[in-house]
Amino acid sequence: MNVIIQRHGTILTIGINRPEARNAVNPETASQLVEAFNQFENDPGLTAAVLHGIGGNFCAGFDLKAIAHSTSSLNIEQDVTKGPGPMGPSRMQFSKPVIAAVSGYAVAGGLELSLLADLRVVEKSATFGVFCRRFGLQCAIELAQNISSFPQKCMLADRASAYNSTFDASEFADAMQYEFDTGAKVLVEESVAGAKRFSAGEGRKGKL
Image 1 (cartoon, rainbow, N blue to C red):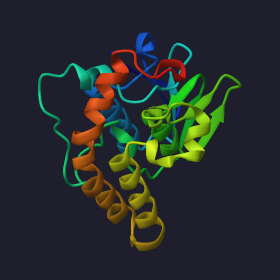
Image 2: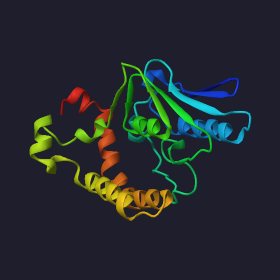
Image 3: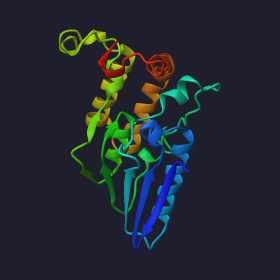
Image 4: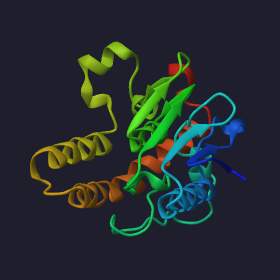
C-alpha cells in the first residue's frame, strides 16, 4: 500500500509510504490519500488526523516520473468543486482538525499537502520549498536580476491566481476554479516538458 492508515483511539494517522521516491505522490497514491481522508471525515468516532511521510521524508511533490513516462494524456478534473486534485486531498475541506507531521522534504506538491493541515509539527530535518521553479535560471542571483528566466506562462499563471484569491474570489471554490482554469493550459504546455527534463536529471542539486 502506498498509504498506510492506523487508528490510535480517536486519532487516525495517515502515512505516505513511498520512501524509495521520497514519498512523491503518483495517481495511485493520490487516490489512496483521498480514500483515507474520506474515512477520517465520515467516521464520527475520529476526532483528528495526522498526515505524515514514512521513511524520513514528508512528501517530495508529485511523481514527475509518472508524468514523464505516462503513455496516456493528462486527465484532470475540470471542475475544482468535483473530485480530487492531482495530489489527492489538497482540495478537500474537513470538519475536524488535521495535523501534518513534517520531516525531510515537503516540497512542491508536498508543501501543498502540508498546507492542507490546520497545524504543522516540524522536525529539524524538514525542508520546505518549490524547487521546480528553478528551471531556466543560471544561478540563484539571476533569479533576482532577471525574473524573465522563469518559465513565463507558469509564473504568470501563479501570479494571476495569487492576485485573484486575494482580491477577487468571493469564496474558496471560486479561487480554486480560477487557478485551474488559468493553469490547465500551462500544465500541458510547460509542466510536462519540465517534468521530462527533471526526471532525466536536469536541475538536480541546482545544476542546469
